[in-house]
Image 1 (spheres, rainbow over the protein chains, first blue to last red):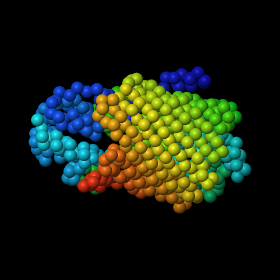
Image 2: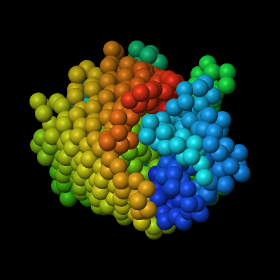
Image 3: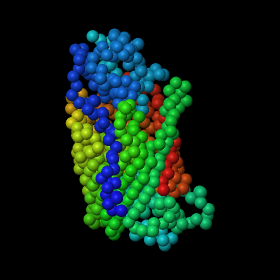
Image 4: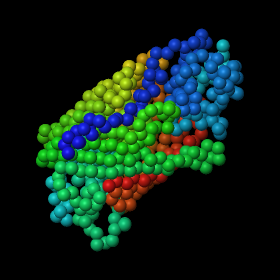
Length: 123
Length: 382
């Protein structure tokens, strides 16, 4: 019995998914293919606030390292934050269908304003 | 009555982690749990307490007295026939409804949150040596990337513990981090911010010291060894609690941890107040400094928690929960989550619970709409 338990103890597997599973993608070194000065900060806001769900599950936002990828995906319309889905779905806009991110804390004014600035001044 | 007294007195003083049970006079988790910091399997004493002080007797005929309830508190309703092996089965599931009533956004589902089989080996006087294996099912979080190959059947915790004296013990293995008030709401900001949620167990060495009027935990951890080494959060934590006015507890915690991409420093202070007759108030306030390896973040978040548990009669607790979270203390944005709840221990081994949550974020010039969610929970253990 003792040996059976010790074996179970040693062989038992642990859950390897926890709060840190996405750290490499979120906080690891990243090379951005974009010269737009607003992009880098926008990238990190999206990494921090959106990709925990919008990476693989619905989309691959973690891999978007340039403005053109956002446009190609139809999520951002250059110079038009009001009609860009990425901005439109953020909860700060106060629209009925705007519920992102769900459950947790909303984007701060500073985060939201930067995303709007990024899309408005899109290069 | 004499038998209950004997059970309560001589069966290990070492209990499922409900920090609010300080309202029943239990300042230390060690009274009722094998893990001195709570959570995981109940010891024999904890099971008797659950049967004779926590659970309602509504389902039992009057002929079933407290002594019988105590006898029935063992695995499969039987008194253990030996002293060295304990087994337990634990299930928790709930229906969660987000945005109830919304024709566009209502989302409802049943989640089997936990199904655990537990084996405890214990030897020596007062369970001097314990070996705990807690294996079972837990779903991957909803934000897990699709295609992630991580088993939903796994060891929740496995550790061995040795108490050199009744006041000092060492524990080694996979276990929860020692930090703050271990509330069962794993979405609580006070658990998410310092990364001490239900999936954040670590391989650790933990020392537990129990004084006359205080309790200390010191833990060194090497992360979750099932993860790749760059992701493992390695670090240390410490929690000190002091008994005040004989029945309340105040405490403080600090935890430093890092992996190749992230450094966290969390600290908090908390209080657990005994309002007597099973009622209590729990409060915690703290901060987490987060530094990321790629320079994307160097901010300090602040969190606060206030929970009340009012027990009008045996088996029933009226709850209220208020939480505050500010992601960056240099910004004025913050989020508040609050709501009432009810917890009903219909009988020993059966807990029914309902919670309503309202979440809203505030900025200096705006606020979000109210976000509503409710949970209806069933918790069964054998």
